[in-house]
Length: 435
Figure 1 (cartoon, rainbow, N blue to C red):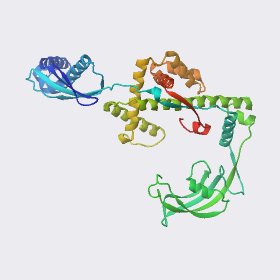
Figure 2 (cartoon, rainbow, N blue to C red):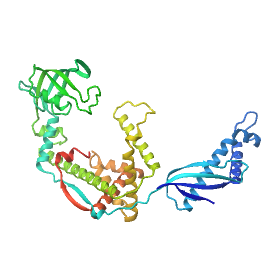
Figure 3 (cartoon, one colour):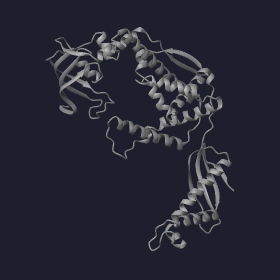
Figure 4 (cartoon, rainbow, N blue to C red):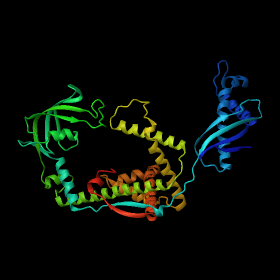
């Protein structure tokens, strides 16, 4: 007989028994199988007495058999009781006496929560909208020209977008602080390389000028020695160079991949790329709004086992990304789990909600949707057909596209049920987020 105790909202404890004879029989079978190849000093392979095998391998084999039997017994009981187990159980053997007729054990585990979708119809959902304009295309062309700017010396005062070279020395209470001094430092004003207050002091200076000024570092500045403190900087500006942008002509078009140098084709290609990117970013933002609404109207706890697993997954992914960016991180390094716990819980809850909606409302990704996702993704590469072939060469590579299609279906379902209000967004805001 077995029984299941309710220990909390999601935690359960199974109390059950395993016949001792079942364990003994399997241990004997495995020892005999092991004896065919085991190398034991003083005996040829397969000739060692059973008693010797018991002495040398009995304890290890018994642990393995017991572990397998516990998991099998648990799985059978969970299936019979229709328990939706989340994660892995923790076993405690209460009676391990080899002479006992039964082995009594308990298994503590969590179950999946019941997902109940709240009243979406009473909720308001903002849908970000934007229509690309000719000004956006022109602005992007200007940005591309700025990226190819040539800097030329000028006698006028420095201003935003100029390239300057300087020496500076910062002192805290009369002493130079770490990172506060540099010679021949080169930067472009307005490129967010300097703190705003420091940059403001440079704007208006001419080449050859020197000045001193006080500045207070932000409270959250990464340099803890000066964070929130006032320092004094002495700056000498050696040069000011103004940007000279290339003309929008055939030469520029060719440098940007238009073989015949047609500037009209260049603008058309830029518009196509921008429209595709605007569409993608709007989708990402609106999907995020829909998912946040689902989390708001669904109230249930996430199984700790799943949250812990997702937390570890996020840690490993973060460490991998840091190493890919060139950050030297020793093997075996971890990160504080508490930094990822809230995000992990959100991801687990959303996963449970999406699975429930897909099952209950038939929102699963269709084959045509997955194909369209892959095709759309491939368009951003030089050889789209190769990218498509790569995805379909291994079905597992389609999983991400399948997940995205499911999320799109759920987003459409939420928008079909909530009170949707269109909210125009600014181009700069849209392109600066959700990348």
